[in-house]
Length: 234
Ligand SMILES: [Mg+2]
Image 1 (cartoon, rainbow, N blue to C red):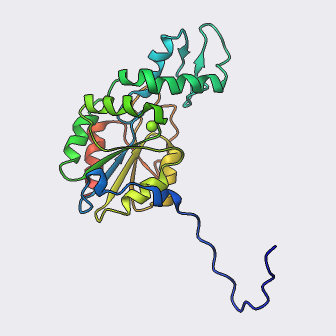
Image 2 (image 1 turned 180 degrees about the vertical axis):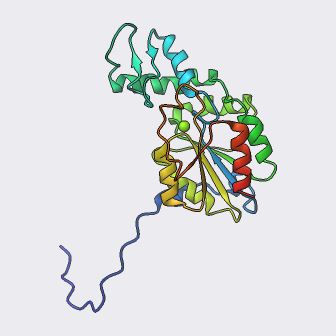
Image 3 (image 1 turned 90 degrees about the horizontal axis):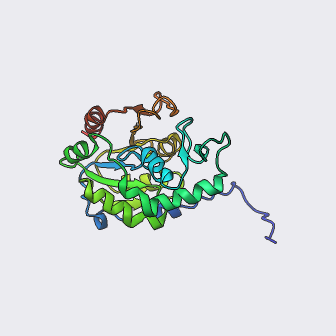
């Protein structure tokens, strides 16, 4: 039990929220990035790579179907001929396996490597992906094979805290690119000065992906996206 406080002329200041994610954030210099340059923080799945397509190909090797019916992962996995999707937990196991065994075959998003190469002449590039830890090696190899060999950070949950901690360390402007609104909203909340872009690589998913163009610029073509990012960090 706490002692009752009898003499407080002013209310206590609010206790700051724990800042663990920021404290744990890697140092920009340790990633080989220059804090004097702008920073581009970019997602992998459905941004640099055709994740849904690759996952679908992987599921087919296990006799399963991935139906692009809604903008969701685990509710789209079916046994052939069935109308009810696989249990979400079962889907999650295939998802984890995909990162370990199948994600190396994913097709790169058209124009993404070229756009990042051009951006990297003016800015640091860091890849921030919500991949499970056991997928790190396959992911790093995939990035290297496709000319996307930039520092790789794995994250879980909303990306705002880590994006904010990275952006705080550079003196120039920063940009963030992701396909998922919760990540974009998280960055808007945590690091509002970071320019935000939504990109959905798979043409089948584009009409299904929720967008919020009043909050985050939506550009599904990497040539146009690269130019818009360059403008935002100029
Ligand atoms: Mg993604």
